[in-house]
Image: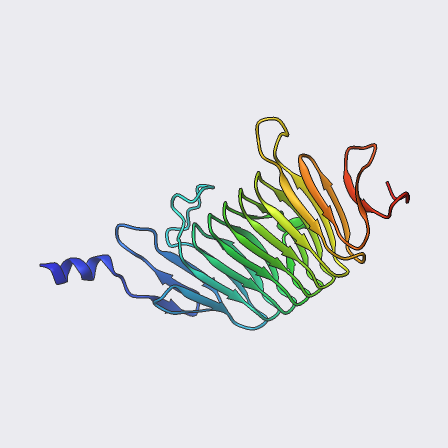
Length: 237
């Protein structure tokens, strides 16, 4: 009887030319449609130059972690078009001139490198949940909304447009542009933090923001209420 129950609960990974599908009775399975290669451990890769979408096995979303697959790895590493709809504990890699969109829940690991584009324009904003880790590097373009307590690292000449929830932070280095909006209301919520390490970095932060500036620059609040890193007694507001 126990072996029969296990067989029902743990369903095999089913793949075809249309993609991969893992139904799991009792919990949410996942489906990767398009040119996907997946394994039973919950790791999927998109074939070079192809389009792939990863989401719940039943095709639903619901807009929250409920009903979404969790603890899935999605790799889009070579000129892909990829869309992600994932719950908590997921990992997504977008590299080598890949375009990514979608969202993942709490404790997500999200990487956008190698002249890739993650969010922005028609793709909308990529959303990651609380406690997530995001990397935007290698002259990539990232439009990210990060949940409370998340950490975002922007470098390598990338362009980051971020909305950060209370307690989230961004580290901006190199010839990178970081445009941050803190979603905290400044009265009842903790703010977010932006660290602008290098003189070559361009940083601005709106809302209840703690801005730290390196390279001899000073955190200055401009007349429009936006914080910027400016040279002492310099202009730039």
